[in-house]
Structures are given as C-alpha cells and as structure tokens.
Image (cartoon, rainbow, N blue to C red; front, top):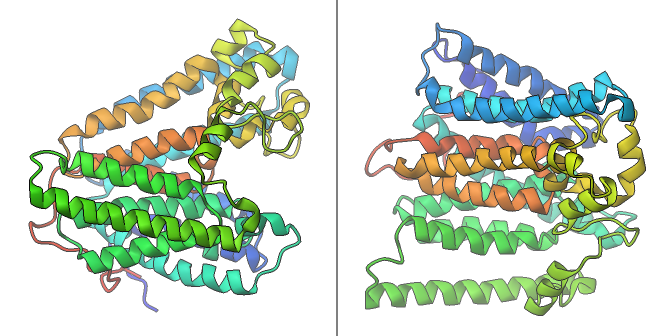
Length: 440
C-alpha cells in the first residue's frame, strides 16, 4: 500500500487519518487497544487547525465566515468558566475534569472551522462517497455480528451490534450518525439526479436494515424527517402537477410498505419491543414523566426541567448560569460532588440537560444558536439542503441522546461545515461510489 501525501495540501492526509480512526476505533478497541486511542483524534485535530492559523496555506473561504462560531463558543466557554469560579466553594476546583470538559466544548467547533476553511467541494464529495462504501461494508459486519455475537445483557442485544464501530454499548450512537449522513447525502444526489433510483434504494435499504437489526427505532423517525425536509428544501412540493403527485404517491406508498415490513421484522427479532412503534405508544412515552431505569432518572423531554427542579432546587441563578464547566462532568477518574449526588438522574445521557447543568439556560441558548445560525447562513448555498437537514437532525439529537459530545460529532460537524459550498464540481457529475481516487 502506497501512501501519497499532497505536499501543497498535507492537511487532507490528517483529515483522512482522523476519519479512519473515528470509523474503526471501536474495532481496534475490540481487538484489545486502549480506549485512550480516541485522544489521538485530539492531537490530529490540533494539527489540522494549525494549518488554518498558518498563513502559508490558502483557505478556501473567508475567515470572517466562521466568526459567529468563535464568538458564540467563546461566550459559552467564558460563561461556563465564570460559573466554575463562582461555584468553587460548592464543588471545589478539579483541573482535570475542567480540562476534559473544555475539550468537549472546543474540539468540534475547531474541527468545523478547519473543514470549512481548508476543504473544497471535491474533498467533501470524496469523503461522502467513501462513507457510503463504509456504510455498505458496515452492514455486512452488522449482519455477521447479529448471527454470531452473544451477550449477557440479552434484552439490550441490539446495542452491541455496531459493525466496525465495535461491540460495546454506545456504538449505536455512531451508527445512527453515519446512517443519517449517508441518507442526507444520497437524498441530495438522488434529488439532483446524480444518483440512480436503484442505487439510492439499495444504499438506503442497508440503513433501514441496520436500524432494524440493532433496534435503532429513532432512525425510523429521522428517516421520515430527512425525507420530508430534503424534499421541502428542493422545492419538490411547489408547482405540483398530476405526474409529480402520482410519482410522489408511489414513492410514499412504497416507503410506507417497506417501513411497516421492517417494523414487523423488528418485532419478530425483538418481541419485547412489540407495540413500541405504535403511534399511541410513542405519544404516551413522549408525555410520560418517568425515566428509563425506574430509579428517579429523567427522560429526554423532562431532562432540562428535571435538572432545574431536582438538581438546582429551583434556584434561578443556577438555572441561568449552571454550575460551571467541569462540575457536572462524569467521564473523569474522580467525580465532582454534583456528579456524585445526581448521577442517578442520568442527566449526562442527554446533551440538553448536560449543557444546561453546566452553563444554564443562557449557555444552552448560545449552544443551540450555533446550529440555528448555520441554518440561516446556508440559505445561498447549493448544498444548503444537506446543511439545513443536518441542523434539524442535530437539534433533535441534542434532546435525544449524548452523541454530540462523543467522537461521532466529528461527522456531524463535518457535514454542518458543508453549508458554505457555492457551486458544484460539474453540472453532470454523479456519485459513482468509487474509491479509486483515494490518496491511500
């Protein structure tokens, strides 16, 4: 294998290595590697960002375009550190936890800025084509794991079947993000007639199959959301003709039939989940105030209010500013007093309640604003459909789980940075799903 590094753009090699480690780190951990392998991504991320600061390398965009990210995250981090200092007597000052927590707030906007300023359109298209290949290969791995892997926690078996993302719980967060990105990109290619219907159907079929085998019910909802949003952003609901309505009805009908078949397969594979995708059950679960462990924990929809009422005891000041960066962090060797006391609530399971606990309502608003501004700024981009749909998915993920503070968020921010593209490679360029142009 010959590795070629573009001397004029060596940062491309760093991006490729980062994506390789991200996609296969779970597999390496299964083989016996330490979980600390993830910190290599931080080193590479810093190295990548150094090219943005180096005037020798020409950026593809105006650095002023990313000022909003710097300002919003700067305000968010500044607010969080002030809260940390203010609460120093309540929760002490754990430098390690503060450093590790700051890492979560800094690394993804840093990667976003690097991608925005260093990568061009061909780089993005190459990455997405390779991600499609990875999705296809990962489906084969998931099928193999479904047939061979046995786990002690049988009721949660689907959480362990994540292909090359590994057989550890939590890997399905990565699978979900991958499938959403592949779905959005393929929809873009299909709606712009750069991908044929059969190829599109086959690729999306693998995503739905994976979601079924690993019992990832939320992807079914994301699937519908992405379809609707992409069609809206492409103006497919404007100037409707009888032919368009007929074609749309066929697509919707076929999708619904396939959806119901997959849900029935899901119930067959995991019988204890029967009825969970019923509309009545979904609404009931959404309105429920109960958590997921029965130990007084929060659920997705009441997590923020739960932190305010249970953890903050209704304290308005804490509700606005939080307890500070590092004070709610639970991934370090030693837990803070806050994390120890309220770990039973599982506030760290959801990005919304986690951010709220550390930087309060003001910080959470700043955090959400970063996504909203990307949505607004992408309005003149030819690829705005990709970025806008990813923003809406990201906002749902803030409520749904904690993926936006895991390494999978690199893929999210990579896709969000696609918003600035102004033109396509060519008017007839198609997605060939080929890797023969890879530098590795």
